[in-house]
Image 1 (cartoon, each protein chain N blue to C red):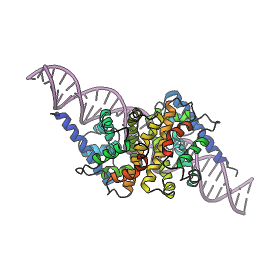
Image 2 (image 1 turned 120 degrees about the vertical axis):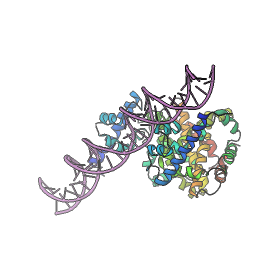
Image 3 (image 1 turned 60 degrees about the vertical axis):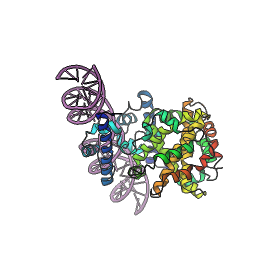
Image 4 (image 1 turned 90 degrees about the vertical axis):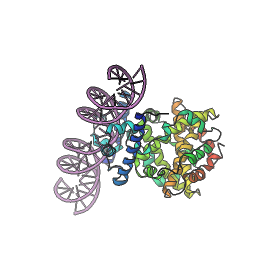
Length: 187
Length: 187
DNA sequence: GCCCTTTCAGAAAGTGACTGTCTCATAGCT
DNA sequence: AGCTATGAGACAGTCACTTTCTGAAAGGGC
């Protein structure tokens, strides 16, 4: 669709910034690197880093959920089987087999407290977007909120166990096992 | 136990700092107040505010969970009926009927993004402390993590609905209704 | 009552994340 | 080729938070 030179440059810059940042984090730790250094390594200005990622933690969390449109979300999430929808999404999304895998980024969720906090906030935002779908599916406002949080943070918990076990198994395994009891309620 | 002069002063300072902070937040908003101003209003130094509360958000979240010892937690949480334990705790704790009620503080959880984030982090920490109890109760590591997060953030969701409804009903009502489906699993 | 030790509040000087605002280059259109 | 609008960079400022040092006073032993 002739994405335009500008757009292409942006995507590329975004990628290189994140990669250089992860390189530096792996090398000297999260706190051992400043935004200025990341910007220098990626050959952009510090303000560009903020324009792309908002916060330092955003470099790692990079909020895939937020970029997903509400319509896209609606067609992924089936309000009658939210747990199943999550599983399908994890299967499709979390195992692309082309990139470096989630380990390099997700590791930091559980190693660096401030990143963990940002990850929680991202899951919290994702949960809030699911709520209206569950309400439309027939749940009360309160139960929809509880269900959405149980789902989002249940996934987070499964992810943490995946990390604690070394991160070498498929994530979907953990999600499937962990969320099985929840599935019995809402499916 | 003659709590000592020092100890008494500390408790008092802690209280006044938090109250003056809330006064200022109500007056000018969270971002409209600096730590220095809070310190001045409470007639302490800025470093004392940090010594007591760690972060600006800590002035509001003030992490009751963190101060609860692990033994205390164990006797409150029944691994065979975690949802019931939570409900009992909410009944006992969240309705003291002597203080100003939770509204004044909890309001900010949902009004100020950074406070919401800090609240999420506090619930996350609380969840992590519950995990071993659930494991001891017979759950697998993964399911324990999912259950703990479902519980903690389910409570958070119920709290949010309580806030959205104006905060004039007992919180326990929301928790009871919201978490009812979860109770069917783990009880 | 007096000393000694330990604790802890305050002062002060950083550090670095993040936010505005302005300027200038250039992609994309006519 | 010229025009315009987008957006990247530069720069200065704010403020949360850290670290370190110093002095005062609490608490305990004699």
